Image (tube, rainbow, N blue to C red):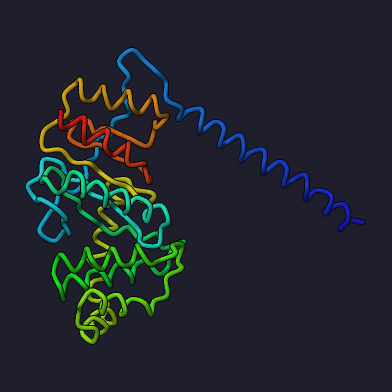
Length: 259
């Protein structure tokens, strides 16, 4: 009898838990909904991304006025989507030297246990073939992985061969774990910035946004209900994109800055 009575409580507990979760989502969405104000202010942040150094992987013009620094996870399906977006950005803006792309590792270990080794594999590709090999190898991972921890680790040496690298040296490099500290350094850089998920991108500007430019971006945020997904730094030299925002959102910032 006690067991039957106890079982009767289970559906009620589930319903109550579901109600609380739903209310939490509702209140969170309500609080994050953009509110149109007279000056269309977008959220600001005080912590800036770690500056680009010689140890970073840069695609495009290192002296570009705009640098997109992305924190990413090779097994994240949204990162795979955003990788395609950034390829388009670089083909459109990068070819003229206007934009540079920096890739940093941010493995989500709790859900993607294979990502760290894949990240180390890209670093081994860089050791054996330089910066171009890094980007080539990274592209092979994103093109071939089904995401969500679905890539067969046996493919990693195959990608090295496709990229024209010495497979024997690649395997030795990967087995050594010599680049685990590099991946971890990127991860900690993201943690310091406040990254909680991937992809997370910081669009870094050499020249601060003018008030008109900042307001233009703020209007775009409100009109497209992107509050919480696009954030401007206090010094107006950085615009953060939280998530796999569409190409239009990235281009909004790039085109606004270029005016």
